[in-house]
Image 1 (cartoon, rainbow, N blue to C red):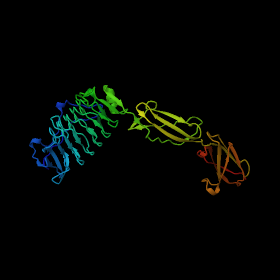
Image 2: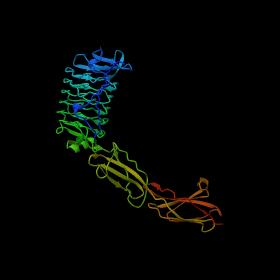
Image 3: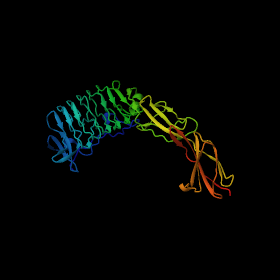
Image 4: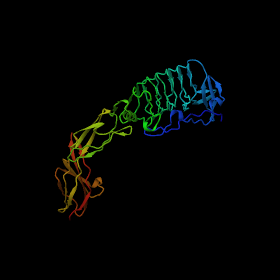
Length: 417
Protein backbone atom coordinates (compact mmCIF):
# COMPACT_ATOMS: atom_id res chain seq x y z
CA UNK A 1 0.00 0.00 0.00
CA UNK A 2 1.27 3.43 -0.89
CA UNK A 3 1.63 5.69 2.08
CA UNK A 4 -1.22 8.07 2.86
CA UNK A 5 -2.20 10.74 5.33
CA UNK A 6 -4.50 9.57 8.13
CA UNK A 7 -6.87 12.07 9.67
CA UNK A 8 -5.73 14.12 12.62
CA UNK A 9 -8.11 12.97 15.32
CA UNK A 10 -8.94 14.71 18.55
CA UNK A 11 -8.34 12.25 21.37
CA UNK A 12 -11.46 13.34 23.19
CA UNK A 13 -14.90 12.00 24.00
CA UNK A 14 -17.55 14.55 23.06
CA UNK A 15 -20.45 14.09 25.42
CA UNK A 16 -22.45 16.99 26.83
CA UNK A 17 -22.33 16.68 30.54
CA UNK A 18 -18.76 15.82 31.32
CA UNK A 19 -15.40 14.79 29.90
CA UNK A 20 -11.81 15.87 30.22
CA UNK A 21 -10.22 18.13 27.64
CA UNK A 22 -6.79 19.64 27.11
CA UNK A 23 -6.08 23.21 26.00
CA UNK A 24 -5.93 23.65 22.23
CA UNK A 25 -2.18 23.80 22.20
CA UNK A 26 -1.95 20.49 24.02
CA UNK A 27 -4.18 18.54 21.64
CA UNK A 28 -2.56 15.44 20.26
CA UNK A 29 -2.49 14.66 16.54
CA UNK A 30 -2.82 11.05 15.49
CA UNK A 31 -0.88 10.55 12.26
CA UNK A 32 -0.13 6.87 11.84
CA UNK A 33 1.60 7.19 8.46
CA UNK A 34 3.95 9.98 7.33
CA UNK A 35 4.06 13.75 7.07
CA UNK A 36 2.83 15.53 3.97
CA UNK A 37 6.28 16.81 3.11
CA UNK A 38 7.68 13.29 3.01
CA UNK A 39 4.93 11.85 0.79
CA UNK A 40 5.41 11.42 -2.95
CA UNK A 41 2.15 12.14 -4.76
CA UNK A 42 1.24 11.90 -8.42
CA UNK A 43 -0.53 14.81 -10.10
CA UNK A 44 -3.47 14.84 -12.51
CA UNK A 45 -6.23 17.30 -13.43
CA UNK A 46 -5.02 19.84 -10.89
CA UNK A 47 -4.81 17.46 -7.93
CA UNK A 48 -2.04 15.67 -6.11
CA UNK A 49 -3.26 12.18 -5.31
CA UNK A 50 -2.38 8.75 -4.03
CA UNK A 51 -3.94 5.30 -4.48
CA UNK A 52 -5.35 3.38 -1.53
CA UNK A 53 -5.12 -0.39 -1.07
CA UNK A 54 -8.58 -0.88 -2.55
CA UNK A 55 -7.55 0.89 -5.75
CA UNK A 56 -9.53 4.07 -5.05
CA UNK A 57 -8.14 7.60 -5.04
CA UNK A 58 -7.10 9.68 -2.05
CA UNK A 59 -6.94 13.36 -3.05
CA UNK A 60 -4.17 15.15 -1.20
CA UNK A 61 -3.87 18.71 -2.51
CA UNK A 62 -5.50 20.99 -5.08
CA UNK A 63 -2.79 22.53 -7.22
CA UNK A 64 -4.95 23.88 -10.03
CA UNK A 65 -5.79 27.51 -10.72
CA UNK A 66 -8.90 29.58 -11.32
CA UNK A 67 -11.65 30.85 -9.04
CA UNK A 68 -13.79 27.69 -8.91
CA UNK A 69 -13.00 24.05 -8.34
CA UNK A 70 -14.96 20.80 -8.46
CA UNK A 71 -13.67 17.70 -6.77
CA UNK A 72 -13.67 14.90 -9.38
CA UNK A 73 -15.62 11.69 -8.82
CA UNK A 74 -12.89 9.75 -10.63
CA UNK A 75 -9.24 10.36 -11.46
CA UNK A 76 -7.35 8.34 -14.06
CA UNK A 77 -10.32 5.98 -14.17
CA UNK A 78 -10.23 5.37 -10.40
CA UNK A 79 -13.00 6.34 -7.98
CA UNK A 80 -12.27 9.17 -5.53
CA UNK A 81 -13.22 8.04 -1.99
CA UNK A 82 -11.18 10.16 0.44
CA UNK A 83 -10.18 13.82 0.89
CA UNK A 84 -7.09 15.04 2.71
CA UNK A 85 -7.28 17.68 5.42
CA UNK A 86 -4.88 19.73 3.26
CA UNK A 87 -6.97 19.50 0.09
CA UNK A 88 -7.80 23.22 -0.32
CA UNK A 89 -6.04 24.40 2.81
CA UNK A 90 -4.75 27.97 2.58
CA UNK A 91 -5.99 28.64 -0.95
CA UNK A 92 -6.53 32.42 -1.27
CA UNK A 93 -8.06 32.46 -4.77
CA UNK A 94 -10.97 30.01 -4.88
CA UNK A 95 -14.41 31.58 -4.47
CA UNK A 96 -16.54 28.47 -5.07
CA UNK A 97 -15.89 24.78 -4.42
CA UNK A 98 -18.12 21.79 -5.19
CA UNK A 99 -17.82 18.31 -3.72
CA UNK A 100 -19.79 15.50 -5.42
CA UNK A 101 -21.56 12.63 -3.69
CA UNK A 102 -19.94 9.26 -3.15
CA UNK A 103 -16.97 10.37 -1.03
CA UNK A 104 -17.19 8.72 2.38
CA UNK A 105 -13.98 9.72 4.19
CA UNK A 106 -13.06 13.30 5.05
CA UNK A 107 -9.87 13.72 7.07
CA UNK A 108 -10.09 15.66 10.34
CA UNK A 109 -8.07 18.83 10.63
CA UNK A 110 -5.93 19.73 13.59
CA UNK A 111 -4.59 22.68 15.59
CA UNK A 112 -1.40 22.71 13.53
CA UNK A 113 -3.13 24.51 10.66
CA UNK A 114 -4.74 21.78 8.57
CA UNK A 115 -8.38 21.53 7.58
CA UNK A 116 -9.99 20.76 4.21
CA UNK A 117 -11.01 24.38 3.48
CA UNK A 118 -9.09 26.06 6.28
CA UNK A 119 -7.85 29.52 5.43
CA UNK A 120 -9.71 29.74 2.10
CA UNK A 121 -10.24 33.44 2.69
CA UNK A 122 -11.88 34.14 -0.69
CA UNK A 123 -14.37 31.24 -0.47
CA UNK A 124 -17.93 32.53 -0.80
CA UNK A 125 -19.83 29.41 -1.78
CA UNK A 126 -19.36 25.73 -1.09
CA UNK A 127 -21.59 22.97 -2.45
CA UNK A 128 -21.52 19.95 -0.17
CA UNK A 129 -23.00 16.53 -1.08
CA UNK A 130 -26.10 15.17 0.66
CA UNK A 131 -24.26 12.00 1.71
CA UNK A 132 -21.44 13.82 3.50
CA UNK A 133 -21.18 12.09 6.93
CA UNK A 134 -19.85 14.97 9.06
CA UNK A 135 -18.16 18.36 9.07
CA UNK A 136 -14.56 17.53 10.13
CA UNK A 137 -12.57 19.44 12.72
CA UNK A 138 -11.18 22.79 11.48
CA UNK A 139 -12.88 22.12 8.12
CA UNK A 140 -13.84 25.76 7.39
CA UNK A 141 -11.72 27.52 10.01
CA UNK A 142 -10.62 30.95 8.79
CA UNK A 143 -12.97 31.09 5.78
CA UNK A 144 -13.58 34.76 6.50
CA UNK A 145 -15.65 35.51 3.38
CA UNK A 146 -18.06 32.58 3.71
CA UNK A 147 -21.38 34.16 4.72
CA UNK A 148 -23.79 31.25 4.36
CA UNK A 149 -23.75 27.49 4.03
CA UNK A 150 -26.31 24.73 3.53
CA UNK A 151 -25.26 21.82 5.69
CA UNK A 152 -25.95 18.34 4.25
CA UNK A 153 -29.03 16.67 5.73
CA UNK A 154 -27.17 13.48 6.65
CA UNK A 155 -24.28 14.85 8.68
CA UNK A 156 -24.18 13.64 12.28
CA UNK A 157 -21.48 15.88 13.73
CA UNK A 158 -20.09 19.42 13.58
CA UNK A 159 -16.40 18.93 14.37
CA UNK A 160 -14.10 20.75 16.77
CA UNK A 161 -13.44 24.34 15.59
CA UNK A 162 -15.12 23.45 12.28
CA UNK A 163 -16.14 27.07 11.54
CA UNK A 164 -13.70 28.85 13.82
CA UNK A 165 -13.08 32.41 12.67
CA UNK A 166 -15.69 32.41 9.88
CA UNK A 167 -16.37 36.06 10.60
CA UNK A 168 -18.94 36.54 7.81
CA UNK A 169 -21.03 33.46 8.57
CA UNK A 170 -24.60 34.14 9.71
CA UNK A 171 -27.90 32.40 10.39
CA UNK A 172 -26.92 28.71 10.47
CA UNK A 173 -29.41 25.82 10.52
CA UNK A 174 -28.20 22.56 12.04
CA UNK A 175 -29.77 19.50 10.30
CA UNK A 176 -31.90 17.08 12.31
CA UNK A 177 -29.46 14.15 12.12
CA UNK A 178 -26.64 16.03 13.84
CA UNK A 179 -25.99 14.35 17.18
CA UNK A 180 -23.29 16.62 18.54
CA UNK A 181 -21.69 20.02 18.11
CA UNK A 182 -18.14 19.98 19.35
CA UNK A 183 -16.36 22.73 21.30
CA UNK A 184 -15.22 25.87 19.46
CA UNK A 185 -17.29 24.81 16.42
CA UNK A 186 -18.37 28.44 15.86
CA UNK A 187 -15.67 30.27 17.79
CA UNK A 188 -15.36 33.96 16.84
CA UNK A 189 -18.03 33.77 14.12
CA UNK A 190 -18.76 37.41 14.87
CA UNK A 191 -21.56 37.80 12.28
CA UNK A 192 -23.42 34.74 13.54
CA UNK A 193 -26.46 36.13 15.36
CA UNK A 194 -28.85 33.19 14.86
CA UNK A 195 -28.41 29.44 14.88
CA UNK A 196 -31.05 26.71 14.91
CA UNK A 197 -30.16 23.53 16.83
CA UNK A 198 -32.82 20.76 16.75
CA UNK A 199 -33.82 18.80 19.82
CA UNK A 200 -32.42 15.68 18.16
CA UNK A 201 -28.91 17.05 18.77
CA UNK A 202 -28.03 15.49 22.10
CA UNK A 203 -24.59 17.02 22.72
CA UNK A 204 -23.64 20.69 22.63
CA UNK A 205 -20.01 21.24 23.60
CA UNK A 206 -18.69 20.10 26.96
CA UNK A 207 -19.34 20.87 30.60
CA UNK A 208 -17.75 24.18 31.49
CA UNK A 209 -16.44 23.21 34.90
CA UNK A 210 -14.10 20.48 33.69
CA UNK A 211 -12.79 21.78 30.37
CA UNK A 212 -10.47 24.44 29.09
CA UNK A 213 -12.03 24.84 25.65
CA UNK A 214 -15.65 23.79 26.04
CA UNK A 215 -17.91 26.33 24.38
CA UNK A 216 -19.01 25.95 20.71
CA UNK A 217 -19.70 29.69 20.68
CA UNK A 218 -16.55 31.03 22.31
CA UNK A 219 -16.19 34.73 21.59
CA UNK A 220 -19.82 35.23 20.56
CA UNK A 221 -21.45 34.01 23.78
CA UNK A 222 -23.48 37.20 24.25
CA UNK A 223 -24.42 37.92 20.64
CA UNK A 224 -25.68 34.64 19.17
CA UNK A 225 -29.28 33.56 19.74
CA UNK A 226 -30.01 29.84 19.75
CA UNK A 227 -33.34 28.66 18.43
CA UNK A 228 -34.31 25.18 19.54
CA UNK A 229 -37.16 23.05 20.87
CA UNK A 230 -38.15 22.44 24.50
CA UNK A 231 -36.19 19.83 26.50
CA UNK A 232 -33.33 19.83 23.97
CA UNK A 233 -29.64 19.71 24.87
CA UNK A 234 -29.33 23.15 23.28
CA UNK A 235 -32.06 24.54 25.55
CA UNK A 236 -30.33 23.01 28.57
CA UNK A 237 -27.01 24.50 27.45
CA UNK A 238 -28.57 27.95 26.99
CA UNK A 239 -30.37 27.79 30.33
CA UNK A 240 -27.30 26.53 32.21
CA UNK A 241 -24.97 29.23 30.91
CA UNK A 242 -27.43 32.09 30.52
CA UNK A 243 -27.34 32.30 26.72
CA UNK A 244 -29.91 33.90 24.47
CA UNK A 245 -32.44 31.26 23.44
CA UNK A 246 -35.73 31.17 21.59
CA UNK A 247 -37.91 28.12 22.03
CA UNK A 248 -39.54 26.95 18.83
CA UNK A 249 -42.90 25.38 19.61
CA UNK A 250 -43.39 21.80 18.49
CA UNK A 251 -46.65 20.92 16.77
CA UNK A 252 -48.16 17.80 18.36
CA UNK A 253 -51.16 17.59 16.03
CA UNK A 254 -49.58 14.83 13.93
CA UNK A 255 -49.00 12.52 16.89
CA UNK A 256 -51.18 9.40 16.85
CA UNK A 257 -53.08 8.58 20.02
CA UNK A 258 -54.45 5.05 20.33
CA UNK A 259 -57.11 4.39 22.97
CA UNK A 260 -58.80 1.09 23.85
CA UNK A 261 -62.50 0.40 24.42
CA UNK A 262 -63.53 1.28 27.96
CA UNK A 263 -66.18 -0.21 30.22
CA UNK A 264 -68.82 2.03 31.77
CA UNK A 265 -68.39 2.55 35.50
CA UNK A 266 -71.03 5.21 36.09
CA UNK A 267 -68.26 7.77 36.55
CA UNK A 268 -66.31 9.94 34.11
CA UNK A 269 -63.66 7.93 32.28
CA UNK A 270 -60.30 9.64 31.78
CA UNK A 271 -57.92 7.40 29.84
CA UNK A 272 -54.25 7.31 30.85
CA UNK A 273 -51.83 7.87 27.96
CA UNK A 274 -48.39 9.26 27.19
CA UNK A 275 -47.27 11.63 24.48
CA UNK A 276 -43.66 11.46 23.33
CA UNK A 277 -41.68 13.75 21.05
CA UNK A 278 -38.21 12.57 19.98
CA UNK A 279 -38.06 10.22 22.95
CA UNK A 280 -39.15 12.91 25.44
CA UNK A 281 -42.30 12.16 27.44
CA UNK A 282 -44.39 15.31 27.70
CA UNK A 283 -45.81 16.46 31.02
CA UNK A 284 -49.55 16.89 31.46
CA UNK A 285 -50.40 20.38 32.63
CA UNK A 286 -46.98 21.72 31.64
CA UNK A 287 -46.72 20.67 28.00
CA UNK A 288 -50.36 19.91 27.20
CA UNK A 289 -53.91 20.03 28.54
CA UNK A 290 -56.70 17.48 28.13
CA UNK A 291 -60.44 17.99 27.65
CA UNK A 292 -63.04 15.20 27.64
CA UNK A 293 -66.55 15.15 26.20
CA UNK A 294 -69.34 12.56 26.80
CA UNK A 295 -66.93 10.40 28.74
CA UNK A 296 -69.35 9.02 31.37
CA UNK A 297 -72.13 7.15 29.60
CA UNK A 298 -72.21 4.34 27.04
CA UNK A 299 -71.44 5.50 23.50
CA UNK A 300 -68.70 7.51 21.83
CA UNK A 301 -66.60 9.82 23.99
CA UNK A 302 -64.03 12.31 22.75
CA UNK A 303 -60.70 13.63 23.98
CA UNK A 304 -58.87 16.80 22.92
CA UNK A 305 -55.19 17.24 23.76
CA UNK A 306 -53.91 20.80 23.31
CA UNK A 307 -50.26 21.81 23.28
CA UNK A 308 -49.04 24.18 25.97
CA UNK A 309 -45.80 26.00 26.75
CA UNK A 310 -43.27 24.83 24.18
CA UNK A 311 -45.86 22.79 22.30
CA UNK A 312 -48.73 23.74 20.02
CA UNK A 313 -51.50 22.08 18.02
CA UNK A 314 -54.23 19.68 19.08
CA UNK A 315 -54.86 15.95 18.98
CA UNK A 316 -58.49 14.89 18.71
CA UNK A 317 -59.50 11.30 19.35
CA UNK A 318 -62.69 9.36 20.12
CA UNK A 319 -63.03 6.25 22.21
CA UNK A 320 -65.85 3.81 22.86
CA UNK A 321 -67.53 3.17 26.19
CA UNK A 322 -69.48 -0.09 26.45
CA UNK A 323 -71.76 -1.37 29.23
CA UNK A 324 -70.27 -3.37 32.06
CA UNK A 325 -70.64 -7.14 31.77
CA UNK A 326 -73.24 -8.76 34.03
CA UNK A 327 -72.38 -11.00 36.96
CA UNK A 328 -74.68 -14.03 37.24
CA UNK A 329 -75.55 -14.40 40.91
CA UNK A 330 -77.87 -17.41 40.70
CA UNK A 331 -78.85 -20.08 38.16
CA UNK A 332 -81.47 -22.65 39.18
CA UNK A 333 -84.10 -25.02 37.79
CA UNK A 334 -87.11 -24.20 40.00
CA UNK A 335 -89.45 -26.56 38.16
CA UNK A 336 -89.44 -29.17 35.43
CA UNK A 337 -88.54 -27.81 32.01
CA UNK A 338 -87.54 -24.40 33.48
CA UNK A 339 -84.45 -22.48 34.49
CA UNK A 340 -84.16 -19.17 36.31
CA UNK A 341 -81.19 -16.86 35.93
CA UNK A 342 -80.52 -13.87 38.19
CA UNK A 343 -77.75 -11.27 37.63
CA UNK A 344 -76.61 -7.97 39.05
CA UNK A 345 -77.28 -4.63 37.40
CA UNK A 346 -74.57 -3.61 34.93
CA UNK A 347 -73.39 0.00 34.71
CA UNK A 348 -74.60 1.60 31.49
CA UNK A 349 -76.92 -1.28 30.56
CA UNK A 350 -80.43 -0.79 29.15
CA UNK A 351 -81.23 -4.45 28.46
CA UNK A 352 -79.76 -7.92 28.85
CA UNK A 353 -79.23 -10.70 26.33
CA UNK A 354 -79.37 -14.25 27.69
CA UNK A 355 -77.97 -17.16 25.69
CA UNK A 356 -78.70 -20.73 26.77
CA UNK A 357 -77.63 -24.00 25.18
CA UNK A 358 -77.20 -27.71 25.77
CA UNK A 359 -73.69 -27.29 24.31
CA UNK A 360 -70.99 -25.70 26.43
CA UNK A 361 -69.54 -24.37 23.18
CA UNK A 362 -72.90 -22.74 22.35
CA UNK A 363 -73.17 -24.30 18.91
CA UNK A 364 -75.58 -22.53 16.63
CA UNK A 365 -78.12 -25.40 16.45
CA UNK A 366 -78.41 -25.82 20.21
CA UNK A 367 -78.36 -22.16 21.27
CA UNK A 368 -81.28 -19.81 21.84
CA UNK A 369 -81.38 -16.15 22.88
CA UNK A 370 -83.83 -14.07 24.90
CA UNK A 371 -83.66 -10.42 25.94
CA UNK A 372 -85.12 -8.55 28.89
CA UNK A 373 -84.74 -5.30 30.76
CA UNK A 374 -85.16 -7.02 34.12
CA UNK A 375 -82.47 -8.46 36.38
CA UNK A 376 -83.92 -11.97 36.35
CA UNK A 377 -85.48 -14.23 33.77
CA UNK A 378 -87.29 -17.57 33.86
CA UNK A 379 -87.04 -19.65 30.70
CA UNK A 380 -89.51 -22.47 30.00
CA UNK A 381 -89.85 -25.32 27.51
CA UNK A 382 -86.53 -26.95 28.29
CA UNK A 383 -85.68 -30.67 28.18
CA UNK A 384 -86.02 -32.59 31.41
CA UNK A 385 -82.80 -33.91 32.93
CA UNK A 386 -80.63 -32.01 30.43
CA UNK A 387 -77.76 -29.74 31.45
CA UNK A 388 -77.98 -26.20 30.12
CA UNK A 389 -75.19 -23.66 29.82
CA UNK A 390 -76.02 -19.97 30.29
CA UNK A 391 -74.20 -16.68 29.67
CA UNK A 392 -75.46 -13.10 29.80
CA UNK A 393 -74.37 -9.80 28.32
CA UNK A 394 -75.77 -6.29 28.62
CA UNK A 395 -76.38 -3.79 25.84
CA UNK A 396 -77.60 -0.31 25.09
CA UNK A 397 -78.59 1.44 21.90
CA UNK A 398 -77.21 4.96 21.42
CA UNK A 399 -77.77 7.11 18.30
CA UNK A 400 -78.83 4.07 16.29
CA UNK A 401 -75.85 1.93 17.29
CA UNK A 402 -75.95 -0.94 19.78
CA UNK A 403 -73.11 -1.28 22.29
CA UNK A 404 -72.62 -4.71 23.88
CA UNK A 405 -70.72 -5.68 26.99
CA UNK A 406 -68.57 -8.78 27.28
CA UNK A 407 -70.38 -11.98 28.28
CA UNK A 408 -70.57 -13.07 31.86
CA UNK A 409 -68.86 -16.24 33.02
CA UNK A 410 -70.63 -19.36 31.76
CA UNK A 411 -72.72 -21.20 34.33
CA UNK A 412 -74.62 -24.49 34.04
CA UNK A 413 -77.70 -26.07 35.58
CA UNK A 414 -79.42 -29.46 35.30
CA UNK A 415 -83.12 -29.17 34.52
CA UNK A 416 -85.53 -30.93 36.91
CA UNK A 417 -87.41 -33.93 35.66
